[in-house]
Image (cartoon, rainbow, N blue to C red; front, top):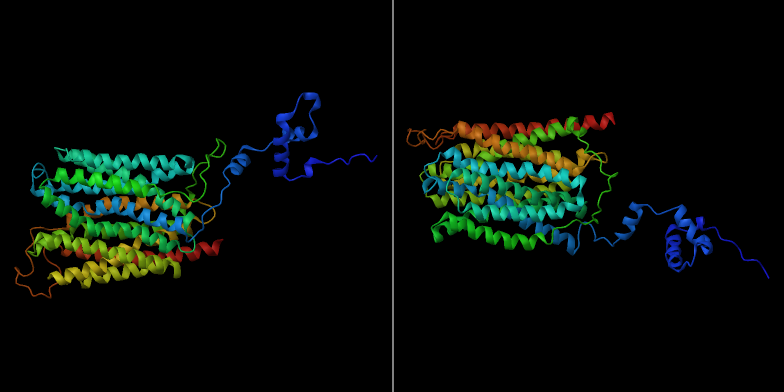
Length: 481
């Protein structure tokens, strides 16, 4: 009888080896009868990482399309509207607080600070969440739900405020912290769902802020008129936000399986890209552009009122301004998929500068104001759509794209504070309207906004120059590699 041929298990595939081991190990009667099949796994154990990867092996949804990818985009757009659209509509609350009890005795600067604190907290907190995600990605979803609950509850509690300081803490800081933590994962998970069409996808998400900014001022004005109370307006808003946002948040998730980092896998975040010329140029350009953008968003209702027009016109002007940014976000997203993003930066800067000088400078009628907010809102509001392309270019294979996006957000958060402060210093509410001064309708500026107009136009020219410098920095980076 022929002797059985021996088989070396080391030559078998690891998956088959493990399968054989799992079948034989439970039936081993004693150590003396342990076969070669059971010894080899002890000599070559499967690592914890390999085991976790095998357990988490799933069929991934398709990239750049499919039901789950577009569901992620729609849900993210809804959350974007709730978070940023409401923050961009604070001007309606600011006007109400200024003229009604119990806050009308506070300074205008203190009341305006509520909205500024909210925006700054949302932008800056994005970076904190990004750092946490890089180290402990398995807790990101939990952080998102906790932050969403914080944002809704703080808005609800702010309806019981009796001092402006209470509003600063609740409607400003805590609401902003929660909103920023909800927003951050949307940007971190976007590159997993879209690659080739990332510009378009990002543009649709970012457009949510414009949609909210266009719709919410009208809704808030109606709620204030119907309820006659800012408190009940905030309570109703917080409840609606909790319901609608909670449904949307259920569909926002990562495409890739989330794996808990082992202690040895947690690495320090690499921030050496901060010294690279391309990042410095892009970040500086983002700051300059935002410093010019926020004063227009803040002061358009005030400028409309300075012309002697009804308050409702100021609300509509702000709504149209935010709606124009929706179109800009989508169009700029499409352009970034087809053109170098640096060209889009230059286009945005030049177009916005011309609209500030040629339209806002001579906007002495409501029709010209609407024309200005449509052109400027579209060209400047769409600027954020260059972020995904720019961050991917800076990060490359060596750095985290999420960290770069987080840095962009911090830069814009600082601009949200600096821009309105500069505009407040430049605005002269005591200046006579141009018609009262005996000037013709062709006179540039007026209504106390001449310096603000010149400042906004100058910063947009600097934005275009930043795009040119970014192009040079990119060329230099390619040459030295």
